[in-house]
Length: 183
Image (cartoon, rainbow, N blue to C red):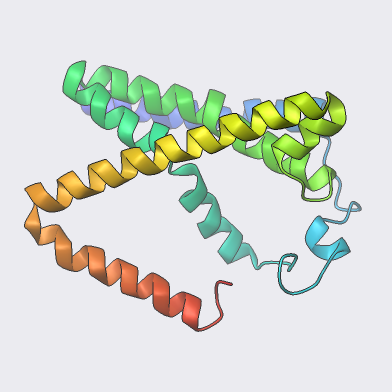
């Protein structure tokens, strides 16, 4: 298959996902309103709750969605199965899983005064669900941190040229935090 045809098909799929599928979810399921205040507006304390600029939120979204699934998954898929599964993983996963998950959990949290999914499940289902969900979230985070740590360490060992950029990124993150941009 010509790679240009594949690229155009994936772009068309993303356009469909954005304009048709996302609109369907928003109109039929979420029904957002600018009249509703966000937790950052309601509980504004300039520490935990602080309205953010659109540019910051835009960048934060991409940092948040780049987890183990979208990064490690395609790398493993291409090494075992080839490029077709990587394209399917990214194209289908972005529209049907990643985008839906991120948007719906964000809106769910906003509608529940900024609470996390474990706390929301406790209110809806019960205390036992809260404990189970909290344990599963903790285990998932430990697994993700482990996978990223191992893959980062292997990358640094196998490609020593990555050491300087790695430290550069680390120092940049620390300096941004030090200037009060990130708290």
